[in-house]
Every structure is written in structure tokens, then in C-alpha cells.
Amino acid sequence: MRKSRKPSYGAATRLARLVLGLAEHPFGWSFDAIRDELRISEKTLIRYVRACRDQLVDWNDEPLLEIARRGNKRVLRFVERDATLGGTAYAVASLYFTLTLLRFLEGTVLKQGVEELWERVYRNLSARERLRLADFDRKFHAIPYAPKDYSAHDETLDLILRSLIGCHRLEIDYAGLLGEGKVHGFDPYTLVAYRGGLYLLGFSDVYDKVIYLAIERIRGIQRFKDADGALVRFAYPAGYRPELLTDGTFGLISGPETEVELRIRNATTEAHLRERQIHPTQRFGFGEDGRPTLTMTVRGTTELAIWILSMGPFVEVVRPHALRRRVAEQLSEAASLYREVMT
Image (cartoon, rainbow, N blue to C red; front, side, top):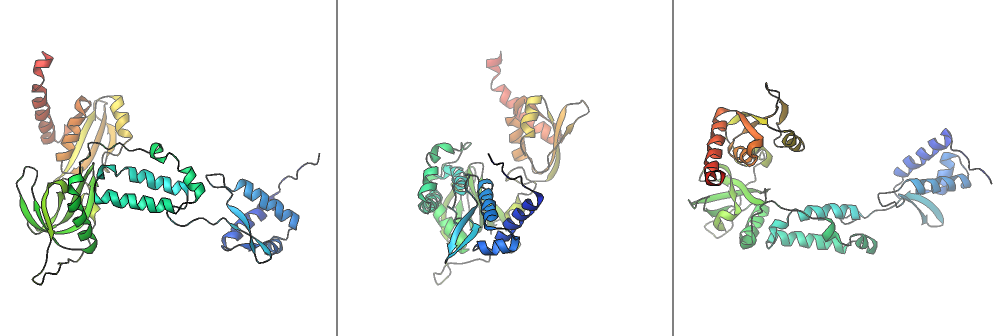
């Protein structure tokens, strides 16, 4: 039996030149031109092509190179991929999983738009790619945490979307958390998804600053019109960026900048917290007693206090004293509700 020829450094160099050359010939590199460039025979070129097609494959084990015809000439080229969003099963899988995160929008115009996007992408897939998507509804699943129900706010969301796109000023009757309402002249800047809820960021003429409104607390909404009945537009601020409004906050509610130190009271909780980004400024260390600590610099402690309470006896506030006292008072009040059970 004839032994196969061992690859040499020269062969490796020519293979590398072949692949790099293909990048410079997006419409294909003719066999004749490749042979002349690499100074190899037809037989050697066929061997190189076979090796490349065997070894250079995508995540589906499909060859990245193909042989095509241009007139009466054979050309080698990279396999053409569909440049649309639905071009590969991998891209579609990424899209589908992202869409599952928005399932709390069921019954709204936002969910309808997402479903139409998915259907349009799916229609553009080849039969082979569709076959790969079998059982996608079972392969990807998202479990939202305490999501809000927006099925009764479809018209509100529809008007907000159209006003965001068109930069139309709104008049919003806002109930507030306990029903204490105000009517705002409102320039909508950003629709924000946060912890299973939707919030509208924009400029309020009541407070003369950018604020956020919870969608479910909007009692009435309409677009402003001028004296001639035309819709009033606003200039979207060039320097505005939504991430700057929440930079340093623990959630949405802002406040004074505060240095916080928390004591982590067992190894399991420490491991749990180290796997997550609780806050961009978080730093893990050890206190004077040797226990692990978590420190961070936050703007506002309202939502931070709620998170600490959710951690029960496993996280303790070391500083600031005001936050420690607030958490202690709320834990004491909660414990008093269960004293009959504990005695």
C-alpha cells in the first residue's frame, strides 16, 4: 500500500497562501490562476482543495470552500452565506432565544411586532435550515421573574411606539404609585425594560427634567396638537443617553452617592454572589473579622435595601449606618408578624 505523502512546511505555507488569496477573490479564484500563483500542479491543487474542504468547516461541519463554474473555468471560493438575519440556524437560534425573553409582553403590539419579525425571518430560511429548527419552542425557554401584565395597555404602548419613532410630544395623565396623579407634558426619549416591567423615560414639564414613568400607571395618553391641529414634534436631544441616567444606580431609583459595605455570612451566599454582577462597582474582599465582604458605590439605596432584605440572614449591612438601621427596622417589623409562629 502506498504511503500518503507527509505534509511539509512548504505545503503548509502554500495552503495558507491559498486561503489568504481566496479572501482577496470574493467572486472566486480560478484554478489556473491558483496554480500559477502557487507554482503547483493540477494534482497538487486538487489535493489542497480536498484537504481544505475536509478541515475548514463551519459549526455544522459544512465546508467553508466550494468549487464553482465561471464560464468554462473552475473557480474556488468561500461558500456564499445568506446575509439576511435568517441566514443560518445559529443566527436564528440566537434571535429566537432573545425573543423568548420578551414573552411578558403577551397581548401587546410589541409582542405582535416580535412575532411578525420571527415569521418574516422564518419564511426566508431554506428547507434545510427549517428542518434544523424543529422543536425550537422546546429548545429555548425563558422564565420571567414576577413580570407585569401589559395585555390591557396595548393602545398605550402603540401610541408610545409611534410617538417615540416620530418624536411627538405627549400629554400623559399619570397616576403615580398610590394614585396621586399629575398631568405631564412629556417628550418620550426611551422605552426601558427592567425586571419584567416597562418604563418610559422622557422630559416632563412638571418637574422640568428627565423622569421615568411606569407604563401600567398611565391613566390617559394623547399626542399634543398645535392650534392648527398638527402634531407637535420635539427635537431629540443630541447629548442624551439613557445609560447615563442609571449610571451608578441600583436599578432605576437614583439618590445620593453612597459607599456601601455588606458582610456575606456564609460560603454558599458568597459563591452565589460572585457569579453575578450585583453592581458595576462591586468589589469582593474580607473584613477585619475575616468574613467575606461586598462593597460598592451606589447612587441611591432604595432598591438596594429591598435587595438586601431579600437576602435574609445571609447578607448584613456594615455601613452606612443609616442603611443598616433602615434594614434592621424593616426586618424587625417583618419578624414581629411571625412571633406567634416562633413561640
